[in-house]
Image 1 (tube, rainbow, N blue to C red):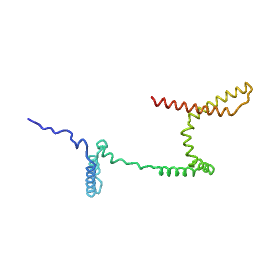
Image 2 (cartoon, rainbow, N blue to C red):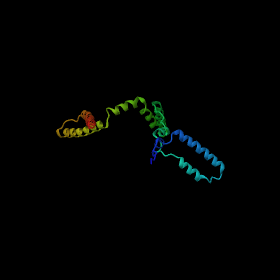
Image 3 (cartoon, helix red, strand yellow):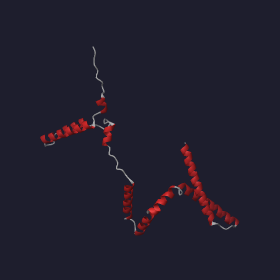
Image 4 (cartoon, rainbow, N blue to C red):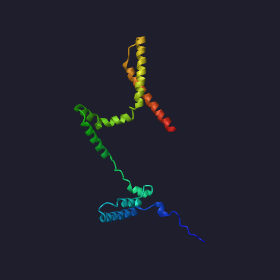
Length: 186
């Protein structure tokens, strides 16, 4: 009384149809649709066709990763030349809506001679933490200096405000660097 059991799952049921099989099924379906369309011009068999499509359709969950990779669209390679072209078109489009003085100023500010050094300085020296620290120390320090000069009768020195700003700038950059160092170690 030996009963042979066939495995419930085999390679074909686990992997599903290949892309060639899917193409072949799609071609067969197209042929059937054309034959049925010629047979009945009324369109009465739409339900039969939709049932056939549902039977032959494969969901994304049933497709293997290799088949899914074939359906993905690969992005267009974006290089520096394409970025520069898009940037110049955007600037031209925006400048059309500006007044003449604003347009001239925009061309001057966004020229490579000014734009590149500005980006470099903005990423290194003129950090927001440095500017905030410089402004805060300069405001507090100049207020104290003004009070001292009024109270004791000294003359107010404007160079001290600039020096306080530079001191605050260095202080703000130092605090930011220490903060990043502490966060990186955690």
